[in-house]
Image (tube, one colour):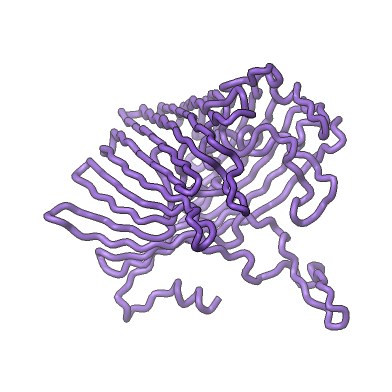
Length: 450
C-alpha cells in the first residue's frame, strides 16, 4: 500500500500534473426469483446482496506530449461482508473467521490493477500523431462490439495489450493497432494476435466510421475478420445511432493442454446490428432501440453463426443481464456462491435475439427524473429440430434517478420479466422444468462521480 500511495501522489518538483477520473458506486440487488420457478426443486427463491466498486483512473501528464494512464479497481463488485477478517489459531493452525469481532478484511484482495498504458504525441510534417502502448481500454462506436466498461452500471470492460497509432485531419480520424490477445505457453507458438485498422469522420453533430479487425492464431490455423460500421447524427432534438458488425473466420479452436484442438475445421459467420434513436424536449425524452444478434439453427455442427453483443451493452434489468434460469447449487460452497447456471439458456449479453426497447423519461423536478421502459425479444433463429420454439418474453422497467447535488446520484429500478415459451417449454433431463414464473427485480445504485 505504501508503494501504491507513492505512485498515486504527484510531487511539485517533478513538474508532473496528476488528474483523476472515476466513481464510487454502491449497488443493492434483490430478485424473486431468477430461477423463473417456485415449483422446480432447485429454485433458489429470493436472493439479494450489496456490492461495492471504486473505479480510479489516474492520469500522469508528464509534458503536453507525454502521459501515463491507468485504471485501478478497489473492491470491484465485492459484496458487502464478502471478505470476513480471519486469523490463524496458533495451537491448531486452523483459519478462524473473526467477523463478529473484527468485521471485514482490509487487506489487498479488494485491489486490482486493471489497465496501464503510456502515450506520446508528436507531429510529422504538421500531421498530429499519437502512439499508445500497454494494456488499454477498448471502445468503438456505441459499445456494442467493444465496450470499455466505464459506465456506472458496467461490470466487465474490454481491454487489450496493444500498440496503437492514431491521427486526425480535422474531423477525419484514422487508427492502426496490433494486439496480443492470448500469450499461451511460453516458447510454444500458440499465441493469438490481432491487427486493427479504423477510418472515420466525426464532428459534433455527425459521425461515421469503419473498424476492421483481423485475429489470427497460426498454430491452429485459425483466423477471423470482424467488420464494424458505426454512425450517428444529431439534428436538433433528434439523435440517431447505428452499429452493424459481422465476424467471419475459420480454423481450429481452443487448444488443449496436449496441443490438440478442441474443435476442428470450424467456420464462423455471425452478424449483429443495433439501431437507436431519441427525441428530447425540455422535460420529456423518448428513446427507442432495436437490435438483432444472429443465431444458429444447429449448434451441433462446426458452423458457428451465433453473435453476442458486448456484455456491458445493457438493455434491461433482467433479460440479457442475468443468467436465466439460475438455480440453487446442490452443494453450497465459496466457489459457486450457492448458485449454478447449468440450466441457464440466456446469459449476460444479447445473443440469438431480435429485441425492441422503447423508453420514455420525464423530469419531474430539476433533480428528479423517472423513466419507463419495455423490452420485448424473440429468437433470431430457432433450432431446426423444433426443440425450442417461442420467444423470450417481455420485461417492464421503472427507474427513478435523483441528483441531489453535483457529482452525487442515486438510481432506483424495479423490473418485472414475464418469461416466454422459450423458457416455459424448457425441460432439462437433469435439472427439471417449471420455468414459467415471472421474475421481479429491484436495483438501487448510489454513488459519487468525479
